[in-house]
Image (cartoon, rainbow, N blue to C red):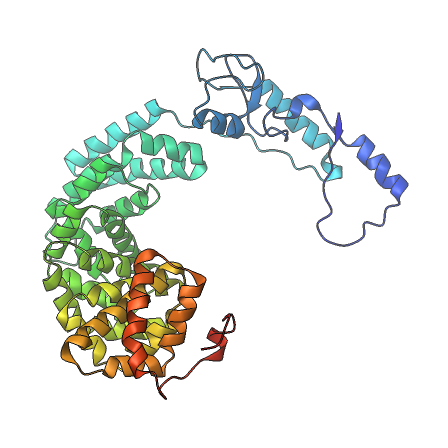
Length: 445
């Protein structure tokens, strides 16, 4: 038997003498059979395995999810993985908590029975029936039940997702989208569509079937239409689903074909609503400009909409957690001639890129060096030298040397070395150093 007491986390003295404290500790003992054999903590939801040993549900489910097939105590191979609730032991634990409430022990709540695969199957059947009838009320009632289960526990969420709920909701999204007039922003099905997207958001990452269904033309058009709305919830849910789908090349190709999407994404950066929407928009744009097909046309469209200036302003005034993906977008845009020309014409380009080296993250540094390298190579072909002069004036040479000293990836190292060779002839009398960036230099230059 071990003493088990509440810790004093307030930092204030309890006013008890050592003798009083010892007496309290001695009286306040956690019975061994109330402890989970795995975590050694008080069991909140005791369940019994086929081996006859009782564990806390959370601990034993983690053990089984890790691929174990034996009972942790007896090491016997389990005949079944059923976890039978031990109601008698749970009631004893609750009574013990109640008896020791004056010692600071909180009574554990009666755990809710976890949802089963059969229950999920039944509710999904109800959803499919409502979907075929386009019955909004019946559909929303069933969806509300799924959300309630999902928010009760992580185990319920896993059970719901593992039984194909995302694919069923994706089919429902297509069905209710096809019933709508896509040209109207006042669709009578919008409430249902928004609820579906809200539910899908807690089921990420989506299964492949759900991804393929949401990539169909009716649902894709509706996602873009929802992004255009001036309502926060519908916009946020729609852009987050689009971001989730952007890992599929086929979806990106279909998205690029929708003309309105470029304008919508740029607007989210120009007129930010919240950081979540801004970051998701940047990630979608990054996927679009990184696409192997039609990428030149896509980049040109974004450049013509002023994306270069918007990203540079974001790198100056925006939140730091947005800088890495913003630099990634900027680097990809520079693969196009129009992007490089727009960047060279902007006075903020070189100061911002040099400043972000070694300031944000390793990946952000990689994007910054790559951007400077692309601009320098582009200028080398025109033999003007203005970009190299600007880079030297804001301390690019020293930053690159420091980067090589600190270490970086092979590709970044190669580009940094090439840049140093290009910059070296222009060095005399043109450098300025920001001392705070170079306090870790091992030697002077």
